[in-house]
Length: 286
Image 1 (cartoon, one colour):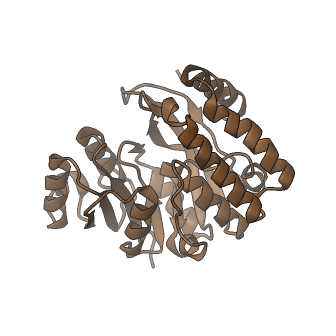
Image 2 (cartoon, one colour):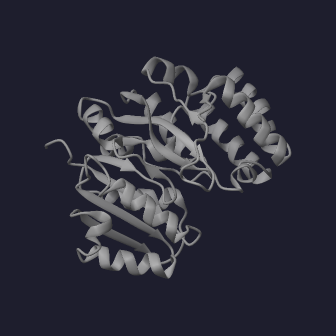
């Protein structure tokens, strides 16, 4: 295998906006300094007609102005099966062991894979990066969310928060499969997977550079709360306790703090997220 033998895995569903999808795809393919060998797009149920038509042309080797000359594999699921199932199915179609995750509304910066792929090829099994949030305007200089870079620090914080930003991650397919792949858990599939990988001893880290611009939509903070998210949080913490990822004391702490966060009003949730974030992992830009 030579540098650059990796797949990009990108799920898309009916709620994704075509404009954002096309920007995400081009940013992760032709606009990269180090281009992927393969793009795997999983349509999790029916998608917007313009996206569907684009993918049909792309799978025939067209749309090179957006994608460049890479292998495109489109997996169409008849019904929406949820993110975890879509990603597991997509992974099965990835031809390369190194897989880069991309979301359908975020932007990968041009140097992303040129920085991350050699590090994974050098021995890491799970690697993320810092990300920069923005709302609607791509030119907006928003908050930078820095992640713990050392494996030691990642292992220290994994018990109370995810030390990886899912759309910035590059991992080894074999390492993901070794811990059972993704498991459905609303908005927490990634955290559960990463915790299991870290607990299994997968070498991991985060690049300190901002390599992904992360779109924060108007409903982002609302989606993080509510009784459905509390149930998801409780299930996550029970899995963590049962698998020895957290102690009984950490379990109780997480239910009190993380569980309480799910039930407070949305405006207060946003205020706390940004306030605590600025102290722990955000850096203001602009």
